[in-house]
View 1 (cartoon, rainbow over the protein chains, first blue to last red):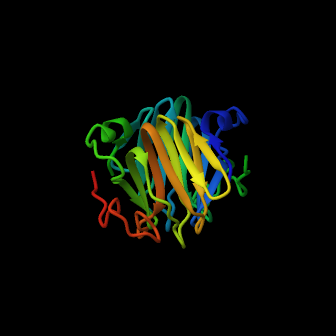
View 2 (tube, rainbow over the protein chains, first blue to last red):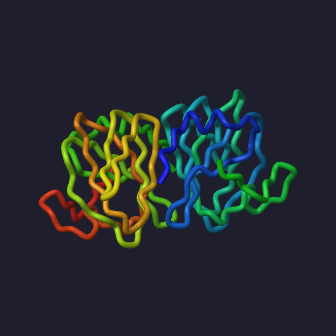
Length: 119
Length: 119
């Protein structure tokens, strides 16, 4: 068992759109990511995905609306729902999702990570 | 989809040791709880359990050690590991765990909740 300090873990990396695994339980990953700029439209056919904002403001575009998430707020994006995260300024986000999830879901893109580093 | 503000959700209840569901995904619950005093020794045979401290300091006793968790820190207690949370002052905690989990695991106790309210 390891006590994980979220802010200390965020200090260990600077890349954007490259989630790092900080914990695993019940087949799910807890990940941290720093986001800046626009991500790619995608969906996860079989996985719901939780975004919790640790710092900054994240916009998530959906096909029918746009949702703004501020620090201390979370949103669960249900499986199959297309979404596109946008961070005008850097955002720190905690993700909770199944361990087998693909980074860009149904889309292969230059931002796609095939492997998530554990930190 | 609902934007969930964690601190606003905490303002909706005051009971101790009575986790509230604020989100569900992939068969897992995200819960909030306010803790004060000593809980009961228990374990969850089949479920890992994540504690994330939103406010305060939580001590978790294990049979072989004691772990202190401060604000912004998290700990995953693996399935089967006996533990006893202790909050000398009130602690606000976020929990991730499977939806079918029993509150006090293998133990039936006056603190046991049979049902978790959604807020």
